[in-house]
Structures are given as C-alpha cells and as structure tokens.
Amino acid sequence: MTERYDLHSHTTASDGTNAPAVNVRLAGEAGLRGLAITDHDTVAGVAEAVAEGKRLGIDVVPGVEISTVAGGQDIHVLGYYIDTEDPLFRERLEQLRRTRNLRNEMILDRLVELGLPVTMDEVLEQSRKKPGKDETVGRPHIAAVLVAKGYVADMTEAFDRYLGKDAAAYVNPPRLRPEDAIDWIRDAGGVPILAHPGLYGDDEQVIRLIEYGVAGIEAYHSDHSRETEVHYASMAERYGLIATAGSDFHGSRGGVVFHAPLGARYTDYSTVERLQAASRYFERSRDQS
Picture 1 (cartoon, helix red, strand yellow):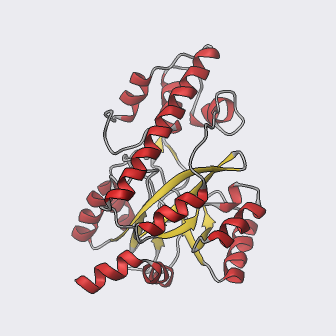
Picture 2 (picture 1 turned 90 degrees about the horizontal axis):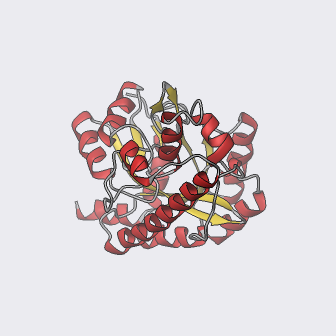
Picture 3 (picture 1 turned 135 degrees about the horizontal axis):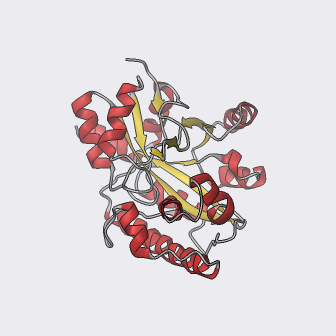
C-alpha cells in the first residue's frame, strides 16, 4: 500500500452520493492509504467511515468542511482531527445546518419566482434525508431535482443557470464568518485548513485568514490549475503552513463524477503527521491509548 492520502471527500451525510463506508472501500480500490471524510457542516458520517477503515486497513482522518461567508462569497474551512463527539462543536454545527436549511428555502422561493417550482419534500426525497437528522441538504440535491423534473439537462446546467454563484436563483444569507469557523475547529482540538483558495479569486482574503490563524491551505485541489497549485504551495511554504491536497470527491450523478475521482489529488503521510501534531485532540487521544 502506498502512502497516498486524499484529504477531501463527501458522503451521503452531506451532498455526496456514497455512504461513508463506500467511500472508504473506493479509497482502498484507488490504492490510497488514507482518506479524510469532510462533509459540509456535519460529522455524522465519520464514525461509519472509521469503522470501515479499521476493517479494511484504510486510515480514516476525521474531518468537516464548514461553510462561511466573507466578502460576499462562500469561504469553506476544513477541519481535521476534531473531537467529533464534542458537545459544543456538535451544537455549533447544528446552528450551521439551520442556516443552511434557511438558505435552501430561499433558493426554492427564488426558483418558484422563476417558474421552476421545486418543493422541499422533493429535495428531501432526492437526498434521502429525514428532517432533524445530523445530515445536511445542499444545492446539489436541489440541482438533482431540477434535472429530474426536466428543468435542466444536467447538474452542470443547473449550477450554471440557477444555483452557482451569481446565477438566477443563487442566494447567500448572512452566515458564519471564516474566523469563527477557525475558532470552532480549534476549540474542538482540530486543525483549520482553508479549502480550495484558488476558487475565491481573492488572495487578500486568503492572506487575511492566514494571519488570523489557519494552520494550512488546500493547495492541491481538483478545481485548481497546475499554476494555481504551485502558487498556493509556495504561499504555504512562505508562511510556514501545511499544504494539503484533496479531490473533493462527491460521488457521481448521471454518470458524471463530482468534483473528481478519489485520489485525483493526494498528499503523503508526512502531511498527515503534521496535521496530527497540530491537533490537540489527536495528541490527547494518543496519550490516553
């Protein structure tokens, strides 16, 4: 087995299409030594993935991807080796899911105004989620309903025309600041990493969050060009940060993989060791074992 780790993947606990255990099995088939489970605003899929990882000999890194807003756009902060059972952290994630649900309702209202009626019941049916669960419903689930109802041809058109940034039904209500997400992750003993910085087009924002206290940046991401990856890897080195890598795998819809297959971006075990060393919770758990 190689030392490759993919540190960014999503499961059915948020907007991925595979159960956590399936992602772990796919990681093994892809020749990965380890995989991080980083669902949006929830850690509901981590326990299942860890159990499957132990069965298969795949190292599962517990994680989360917290949704925030700054400068009028979404900013995502990854957290690794958090204490997923921390009551305060779980309560805070529940707050985020309530805000996410409000955003979903606002999007559906906008779609009705555009003559594309979609109900929350249809979205929940598509997502196979139940209200009140520790799982998240997001724009990909709404996009899937748009496809199923024939409003658009595919997921790409759904985001390009209606759900992506600045598209017709896009809304962005007041949400958590990235600084707060960084604090929350640290409070839970974890390591905050700025996700896919190349998607923001705002290096001033990236540097501001570096100065605030992120421990690293996701330099290598499936939506980054090679030039972008070199740029952010150099930035990480310049500031003494951890440069992470991840595919941002969400599974497949209609035969199309989003964002890329597991292992499309990966790092080695030395990066994971740096994350472990930076995590208070990991160090405490190791001392107690």
